[in-house]
Image (cartoon, rainbow, N blue to C red; front, side):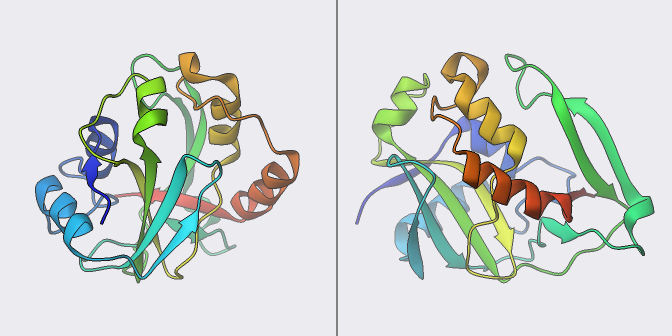
Length: 185
């Protein structure tokens, strides 16, 4: 079985203390051990050859991250310009505040292979590195946010992966994210 490690980038984003919209009930080390010990329900191709998605049944109390926008919750939407790291330029993001989404049925773990991570300046001692995780109601990928696709197309020096923009995938992403938003707790 291929080996998996949690990258520092993912560790900071997925296990922030005092944030209810991160992975709950386990430590980063327990999460990594689980990924190496329990085979995924299925493996999906990611947006590029170096990316795979491992679908696991949720073994935590982690809640769904993407929530449909409705007339009843639209007033809870917030937005701001934010960067994921100090090296990235801030981009416009939106999220819900004051919402209680359901517990996710699946954790869809986003993995990059060792070669791609090395190109991005992250050396790992494993076959795959966790770069993110989607918390979902269905065992499928949540479309990548349009701004993430654009950042990826800008290249590694801007916090992306260097994968060119796929216009059709971008349009599908816009259709999803026009009617959904993440939440923060």
